[in-house]
Image (cartoon, rainbow, N blue to C red; front, side, top):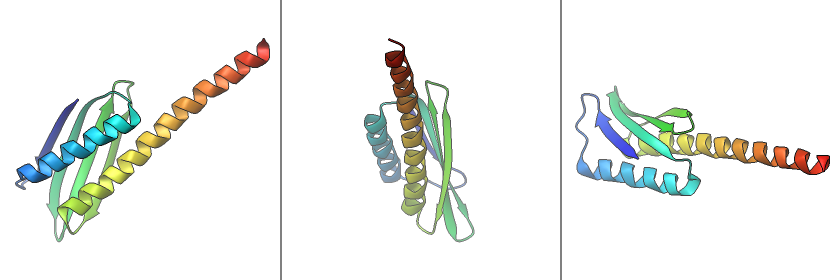
Length: 109
């Protein structure tokens, strides 16, 4: 998976980059949905930081979410929680869809 961490008119340190990559790899191992690339962008607007996370899966799903907070790490955490929620619902939808098909096939036999 290709992970790109950048900032718009904001310098992003090595610690934040490593932290973001480590968390995305944990999410990748947890849900096993084969992401192809991820893009995380940090911006500063007035008194708060904004984090936009975009994750593209090989199945065609593109999950995009944002988080805002006064601290840059908090904004990242808010966006990652939302991203995990999107992936969890997507995986549940796939799993439930296959179980419904199996139940129908069992009833036909």
